Image 1: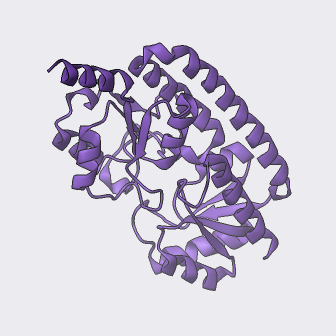
Image 2 (image 1 turned 180 degrees about the vertical axis):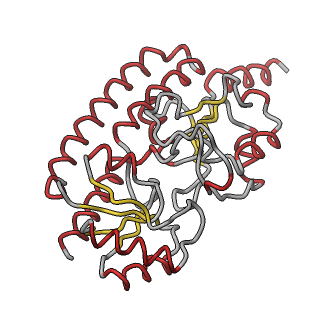
Length: 294
C-alpha cells in the first residue's frame, strides 16, 4: 500500500498541467510562453471554418481533462465551444472561471456593433474575431495568455514573464521584416470576399476597397456582384483575398466579370507550417506573388 501511495504522489508532482486551445496559433503561443512545460492541445487543425464546427465527443473528452482552456473569443467559437464545455462536466474551465482564458481580452477590437440585429448577417457585435492574422494583435493575445498561465502555474511566473518578453520581441522583429518584404504592395488596392483580413491589413497599411459579400454570411446575388464589380474596377483593385473556406464559385464568377484574380488563404496556422511566423511568411508571400503575376 505504501508503494502505491508513493507512486501516486510521484505522478502528481511530475504531471504536467493540461492546456487545451481552440486554435493552433493559440497553442503556439502557449508553447512559446511555457517552453512546453505544460501539455498543450489544439481542438482545431487550422483547416476548418472555426465558426461552424461540431461539438464532437473527442472535443468533450479533451476539454474534460483540461486545467486551462484558451479560446479565441469574440464569439468565433460560439456555435460549438459552449456546448463542449458544458458537456465536459469540468468545473475548472467554465466561462469566467480561472480555467477559462479569453485570448481576445486585450485585442484592439474593430467593427464593434452597438445596435446589432440579425438583418446585419453573420457578424460579431463584440468585434471582428479574426485577430490572429495580425502579428500586432498576437502580442496582445500573448499578454492575456501569459496572465492565465501564471495563475495556472504560479511556480513558473519568472519563466513565463521572460518568455513573454522574448515572444513580443520575436513578433516585433518579424513584423518589421514582413513590412519590408511587402513594401511593393504600398498603394495597391485589394478587395476581400468576407471580413477576415482587416487586422492583417492594419498591420501592413494595406488599402481595402470593400468586400464581395454585401451581407456577411449571405451569398452575394447576381445584381450585387455586378454592382461591386464596378466598384472594384473604379478603385483599380489588383487582387481579391479570400479564405480557403469561402465559396470558390462566387470568386470565380467575380473574376470572370472583372478579370481581377483571387487567392484563397488559410486563416489559421496548420500542420503545413512549423510555427506562426512561417504561417505569416506564407500569407505575405502568396499575396505578393499573386499581385506580381497579374
